[in-house]
Amino acid sequence: MNRIWAIGKNTFTEVIRMPAYSIVLAIGLGLIALSPSFTMFSLSESTKLVKEMGLATVQLAGLLIAALSASASVSREIDSRTATTVLSKPVGRLEFILGKYVGLLLALGVAFLLLTVTLLLAGRHGTLDTARDEYDMPVVVLGLAALVVALGLGFVGNYFFGWHFGATCVWAAVPLFPLALFAICFVAPDWSLHAFGSLMDPQLIIGSILVLFAIMVVTAVALAASTRLKVVGTLVVCAAVLVVGLLSDYMFGAAAQAGNVFARIGYALVANFQHFWVGDAVISATAVPMRYVLEALVYAALYSLGALAFALFLFDDRELA
Image 1 (cartoon, rainbow, N blue to C red):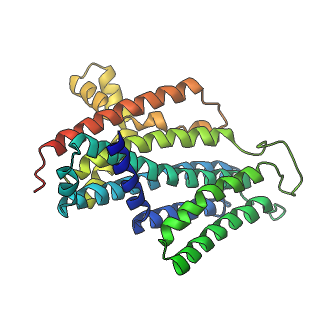
Image 2 (cartoon, one colour):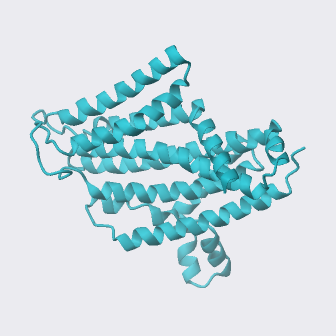
Image 3 (cartoon, rainbow, N blue to C red):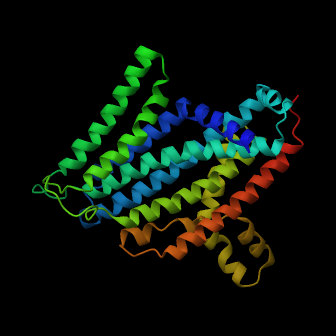
């Protein structure tokens, strides 16, 4: 267990220092933060579009980070013979795969936290549909303050102490973003105090958690693909798994119910990502039962274990020397 945790920590540190990680995270944060402006001309559907666009952005950013990070962490280590050095020590291939998965999940968890906090702030702010609508100043002021302080700490740390700029910004944003959200939950748009979180949408949190489960599955698939493929190949596999998984009910569901054997096999093997997408429920303010969330967690855990077992199978006979 100690060896798995050590590999996980090293992988986490390596991933958050990747330029691709910072770039994808920054683009995702920007898209979510600006989504009220993108959807402000859609009349009564604007707030719904903010939520749906935000959830889709979190999922897409998770896909890109998982594929790029897994490729950098596994495929490049194999090519550069770094994996050979690690496995020459008393570290088994199973520990190597599990440690990589833990590190990738930690890095994706940090990105997920920042993206979800930004989504909650964007959902709280809403859109300015008419000229009479005013900005939600607590969201604007405290949200920007958290971002500016995180960037400032990254600049100071990099300039004076030689710290990695991207990683320092991420470390600074991890406490600052939730603190800004916590403070905003106490104040109304006019800065008056009100009941904690009464203007927030709790269903957005549930929807984001289910998206996190989907990211868990994609990460395991990316890890398996990266044991044999390069960056582009891993990205294509992850995108294909996600797209087919979102369409699995349409592609296999009806035929499987009709008794088609091949459809049943495909329906069983393909991860059904519709289980993790509750965008319709979120935008319609329909409560998602906690039992459904727990069942989705079990489904994601079982599929991730299967993908990790397949990753070990692919990696076990991979020639490293």
